[in-house]
Image 1 (tube, helix red, strand yellow):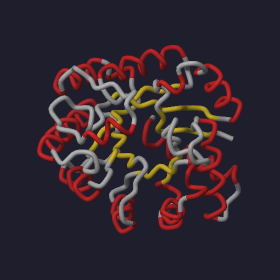
Image 2: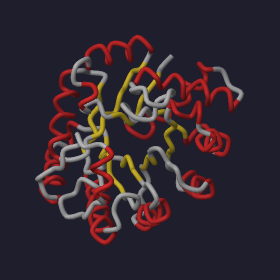
Image 3: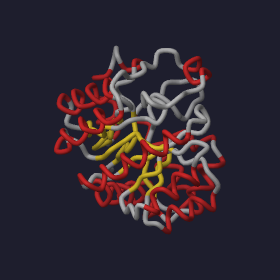
Image 4: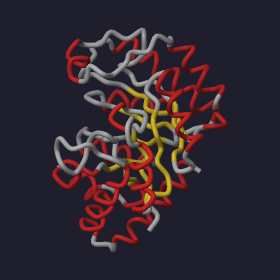
Length: 264
């Protein structure tokens, strides 16, 4: 089988001690590509280094909405995971860095909007508009975060007439998921689908041609509180196959074709 993880954070501190073993387990499971996301300048540097070291790792450079230096963020965000570093590189310089390395990346991500941990939507919207413009300029798909701002995110992408979009870990209303599909975009399903009725409903209502698999590793694993890793995309594949009444092999092959269509 050909498996793919379209959204992971292999530069996360949780992988600092055993990244090679994590990569080895992914390859043994049949994973052919792991799109690893940058969230700020420092993270982008680490992602590029990983992609040069491991062929299976594909780099996506980005700027997480809460990591932008010009966005005010709720203190609750930092208390939730105090190990997350905050970048000191401003938005324009980060985007210039991404453009400079456009030939080394497969996508721009993780980017988007977050209304859960920041009410500073004015700056977030300005930043995301710049990112959308850049993605069209360098002809790279977007990997998009839209927590508690799903409608605003979709409207911005529609206004820009963006055609190559992956909505990562989409938690919005199912009618918005239909809108995503109608726009020709993709939705990625994490391994926590085994315990999430929302993601199971998302699979039921979305055509197989618009689905992909992700892990968001080290988050969103099949077991709560246990570190997630790319090998676990097989859990997403199995659930999609079960719901769609397809074989695991046919499901994996369909999703790999979706990956090739969006990213290659």
